[in-house]
Length: 231
Image (cartoon, rainbow, N blue to C red; front, side, top):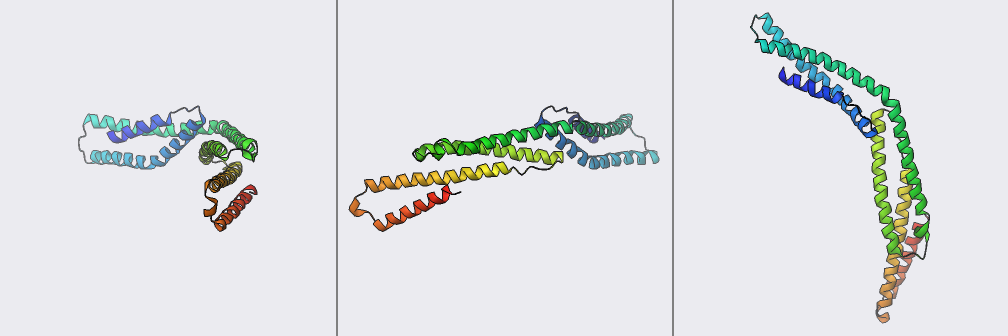
């Protein structure tokens, strides 16, 4: 009885949370759903304890007063727990629309951030043929880190939508921006490789250059840059 009492009390405390932030509310929804799913097993254990004491009573077995008190506490705690579950579900239902709207706004902000990143990839050094490839690659590394953070946000928002039982966004803007970043990265890596090859040819002994290999490298570099620029 003591173990069941402790478990009911612990779960009841979790049910009483009053989250105010979007992430906290989503976490609370998961907690309530998990507790409700676990309630059946908890009720079964509680029922077994009650049946045991009822059997002892039928057999006229004297039960210590302290145990009788704990049994009464267990029954009261179970009833209070069921009320807490119902209250928590009602509270979630009453706040769901507001938090779902907040989630929609967060997703809209994410899309705006992604559009801003996409626009940046079509401007500045990213489209300047005279830019230093090494510096552009450093900038692209920064964009990559930014995209990773935005992607993590997108995954979090998807999980929240699943928790809220609303349609899950496919985040096409994230895919489009990531694809453009990958294309720019490939193109500028090709530019950097081309510059390195040129430096190598200039510093090498002309008589020792493998002309056929150089021609192949030039053709491969040209093809790589052309394909990357067309994506």
